[in-house]
Image (tube, rainbow, N blue to C red; front, side, top):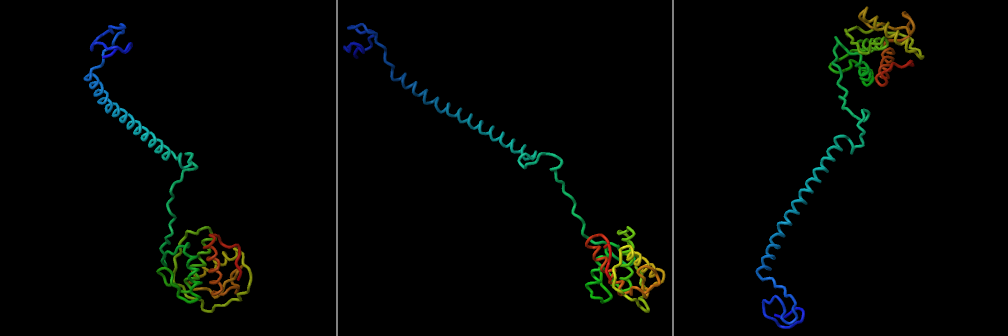
Amino acid sequence: MFCPKCGKEITDGSKFCKHCGCKIKPKDSPNANNTAGTSSVASAPASNDEKNKKIIIGVLIAAIVILAIVFVGFSTGLFNGDSGSADNVQTSQPAASTSSKPVSLGSFPVSEAPDLAQAIKNSGGNFPVSFKSLSLSKSQCLYILSKAITEIGSGHPDATISVGNPDYASHPSGRDSSQSIARENYVDMSSRFSSWIERNGYVPNYVGIYTGGVADISPSRMLDICVSILIDYGKTHNLPDSINV
């Protein structure tokens, strides 16, 4: 071996150079180097495993936090633009029933009269008229419609009508002059017309617009008037202010 300072050859294992007196450091043994290297290499995988575990745990924690934020956001309406006030809360409402009421001669709902009026108009004046399960004569239709107008005008749109089997007028007549009839007058006229049928069991030959005993309106024209009034009522749920005849 050689002195690292003066470069002269010295005996292997010397602690000092015999030429210059420099202290000689002992060289590491090959076994020591191999042991250190092995230890370093062996510890490297263990260190990497610890780092990987920490990374995985960190990712899991972050995912849990994000999911919690999303859940809270949707449950409180934060992501839906919902401030949580009562004004923004929508409650489901039951659908309105569109089923019609059962009809019979013994109990005919006033609420069905507009549909009957439309059926009469669609029939083109041909009787009997088929309506629901009923086959109605002209006399029965006159009574139902005039009575329905009377009930509606009296504030009883949910009433029912007991329909008999009245005869038709024996000598129908009436001037049927063209004019406009105000609501209070045609409601009164309908009341007198239906009351006559109830008392006598048949359709009157005519009806007065403003008073009884005057041949103003024939039964056929009365039917046309009632049909027009009730079709209009079915659309607006209000009796028209007047009707032209």
